[in-house]
Image 1 (tube, helix red, strand yellow):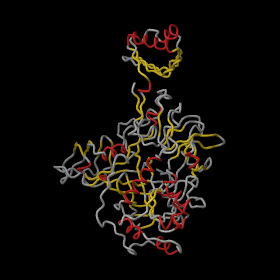
Image 2: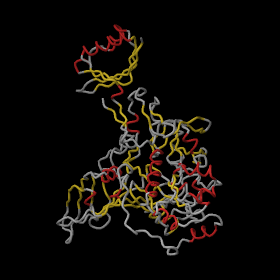
Image 3: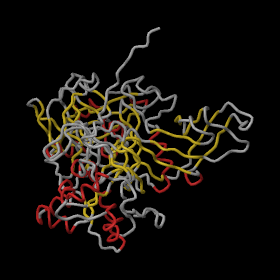
Length: 434
Length: 136
């Protein structure tokens, strides 16, 4: 595994430089063990840091107890590899001669439209974008074989991508047409920028109707024929830090096989949901917006996805390291699949009609057993996110940290927490009268 | 000794009008179960069969098919699991009507048992990274 390069001295956290009220309070509160990110980074530099995955920590704490494990373990790594629709990439293709202004024009990458509302040669492509001539759901269910997610995967893989663009022409940018191959190695910047990833918990999707339905949660067979879930459960980043005590804006992470950062709270970030006694949200809650250098990434961790009857997307690999700053933070990382409950939602009616009804709550332990009980019926389960790949991500991140090449970063701003009052509001439609 | 196999038969245009499967029953006492059948205009006929019977009679029946000009292939060669493309998510597990996909309990890797596959094709478009391939 190639470890992406980090600039030397690139991120040296300076104590007190950033406004981090929550973290400081937390460290002060702890009468028992407390460590700082700077101390952990020093151990990482010396190759002495003790790093384990969020799966391994469960047994370690079971055997040694919290106080001992908190003293010994410095970092717990998490991982998730799921289809994350609100993902995309932007890049700068360099100026053509004569110059062309793509901003306000049209641009296609392998026939998939890219967003051109920026300056002359900056483009953004979203994972769900589809070629204009894709039949979509004209014949239902549409296959959605190729879209923005696939373009990103091929770009990352180093394949040439066909750019076709038209512009309106100006005095300083006279050209109106451009057709050329582009390649990631020639782009000035190529950046993955996903505005909502790593959902903290999610629905379990079922179908109560009499016909098969095709959803972003996969194919759902009629009359509770199957139940699909998508969280990595006990390995999932935000489920191991349920109150966002260590993961914040600026947290360095594994993204698509390279190094990325938390850019902001993700869209639909919803920290104010009901939680279990252990603080685990009982449904979709926090989300992350993440950013990173696409040139470092790999197609193994950014895979174009086709959701039958739904659309195109991309499967993204993310792993976030959690610094064990206190016993409390360690305790959160010991979350198990038994502790995490997800709501069972009918995607034939309740979901599309935005009704709040749920058919019950099930644990990830039950989901991973292969069947759950819904309305008294045994329903076979399937996952849409890859647990083996989540384990692999957590393990790779662990190796990066152990080898001294991946340092933890101090968040520069916390994510809105459970008491922030931030909620996920529905659209309030206001009819436009003529 | 009894034998039961899933096979793919291809009928060239000239054979489409002839009753061939009938002869397998009548002359060789073989039992068949049609899993898939299609005739494309200007192309060949395609039949996916499960064929059962006495070992010797089965072999004779297959010889008869070959002599008649029917091309035969075993079904397992036709539906393949591309392990490089597969992310081991497991979305296929509940899509497959015959339970040909299972999860290895410890690692949760997806296993494809092509003995159970009836080449219905549901997994082909049901797999998000498109790791299942069918070649007839």
